[in-house]
Length: 241
Length: 241
DNA sequence: ATCATACGGTCATCCTACAACTTCGCAAGA
DNA sequence: TCTTGCGAAGTTGTAGGATGACCGTATGAT
Image 1 (cartoon, rainbow over the protein chains, first blue to last red):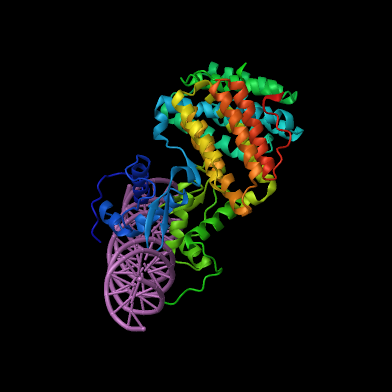
Image 2 (cartoon, rainbow over the protein chains, first blue to last red):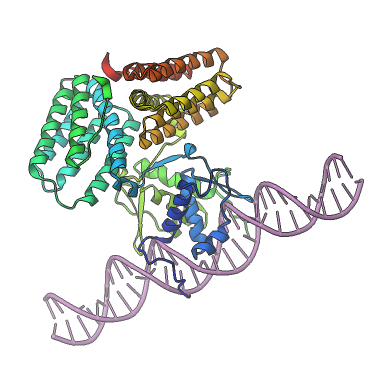
């Protein structure tokens, strides 16, 4: 079979490339909601791939509720509000302002997470949180990042609210990925110690079942974590003093 | 072509059915993270569909970071923490407890959204919010639901934080869909009026640029909205007294 | 004018074939 | 014995064509 000379020599799989392209066209407003996409055959020709590849790409977008395909009619782009999935563009996070906003969202979620956890956590929950905390102290170079995530997730789990856990895990992971790739230099050790110290303060508040203190400690911690990677949370008015 | 007698007679598309099935198997822990899935051919046989359908299903799961496929090796399920997308199972929301938890998450997000919006909103933002508010007063039977969403989204937009907007839109939409299908009876009109009254209170606080009051009004509103659809937010300790 | 029908376009599914890649085992050589 | 190289087998990735199901519209009969 003759190898179709694809446009760009990338390592990315074809369906993903097509999906990204379409996604950007929709996101960028090139195709307005309600409009019809070209037919699968046309897209296949346009991208120089088989119709199978186009279908796989569309399958992804459809799963996100970004487009809707009606048999015998065509595929239509849907309003951005009725997506069935949340996805964060990793590229966009290279923009400092977006990273700042994501940190703000994280601050909101985690602050309340700590507040709820303080009121609800069982002794088992506390044990799990303590375990994550301990693992952060005996740190290898970058194992500390994992331990940090573990700590935050353990708290989120202690809220007893699965959705809170999911959302926090997701946001934290996005931030981690983007930080991880941005700076290959491993974190300075004294900063890690500051981090652990803040964790201890949070844990103490949780163990004391003091929601107010736990939330406050968490808020400060997120602020600190942000500034440690060069992000300043401006005018964060959580629980406006 | 002979019609393969499929196992279940549903209106859902085949790839979606397969994806759901696999998703549930993974979510349920039947296949642990790191383990390999059966080959595409085996899955095709198992579900009684073509390999193409299986590939589309896998394409969806792969886009979510739920599984990873390596050419020449196989497909592996990934740890739930490193998903690249958040998705909410609409089926699960039929369970009252899950709905309760989702409302709690919404309460957290929206309360802070109102707080931030009060401090940051421009006059343009206020106009948009007011417009949504007015549209809720001249209500048709179920247009009021749309107007309600519009109102909340307008506030989220006024925070100036795109992620907050995205997350709130998403959560609200999930709740709306599930409520909408649960009870075909249109909302009682006096309840709609209560709803609008609460909106007015929020708007006033926003217009006065009073973050504290706005957050408080929003928290009460979400609580009210929840109870109006039969969901009680238990022990919600946002800004603990 | 109205309604039933035929037709063309589009997505949905299936099938087969081949390419690209990985793994593993075996055999030849050092 | 150990290493190296190579090929076989298995798996995912892509291509392309065929057919079924479904929709919208135009056509034609009543």
